[in-house]
Length: 267
Ligand SMILES: Nc1ncnc2c1ncn2[C@@H]1O[C@H](COP(=O)(O)OP(=O)(O)OP(=O)(O)O)[C@@H](O)[C@H]1O
Ligand SMILES: [Mg+2]
Image 1 (cartoon, protein in one colour):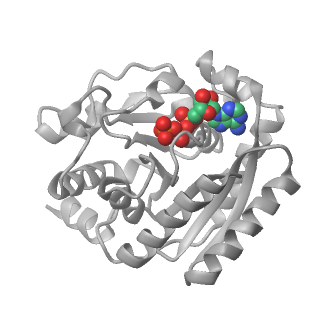
Image 2 (cartoon, rainbow, N blue to C red; image 1 turned 60 degrees about the horizontal axis):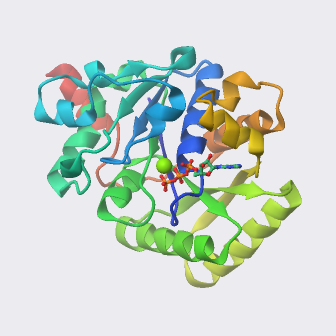
């Protein structure tokens, strides 16, 4: 059965899209059939990092004019990619029904997918929360700043209290060193544990890196262009750890809901 991973953050601009693209490519390199969904609807930009131009968007599949398979385009190393579309104002605030329909669209590719990575909009909006709670695993990107801590705390609180999630993987981005990343994590974890009964799992860090930033400007993802780099070693470690991290079982609306996928197969 396919595993779904939502990549989220409290604060914007902390590296979710860079993480989503490079982690997806890392999974693809591990021979996992991987699909990246740019769920930052209306503001999607992962295709730019990947250097691909989709012919169709999720919005087209929602209208019924194409199937989800037709919206998928091929990225490097066999990665499949679906974009929420950019500059589409009507996609910015998806209503509840449309969010449900979007999650159900992916049932069609359940048998052809090992891992679905969803790049989710920043913050604790209804849209972010819907994708976060629909995924088996949530990776929260944290940076060592009080505003990032506060916003990540708010996201975890809402996801826990409103959607019943208890397991969160944490990656610390833009750090000077691994010990610094761990120190940020420990500090954040101690704040969260004071108020919430949740499990935070440290899955790794990513250094503040000019090479990573340049790879994004050049549209040449570091995970394929610089395989021996320390950044790529970090992505490999994060990918491995997240696969071993605990799943959330919320009982709500889920990607690849086994019962629904099964009934669609029979139907
Ligand atoms: N480890 C890093 N080192 C240096 N620059 C980084 C790193 N991670 C991300 N960046 C840079 O930070 C900026 C924001 O990254 P990115 O777009 O991935 O963040 P985001 O969380 O997806 O933002 P948004 O909330 O707007 O969707 C980009 O310019 C990116 O190149
Ligand atoms: Mg982004």
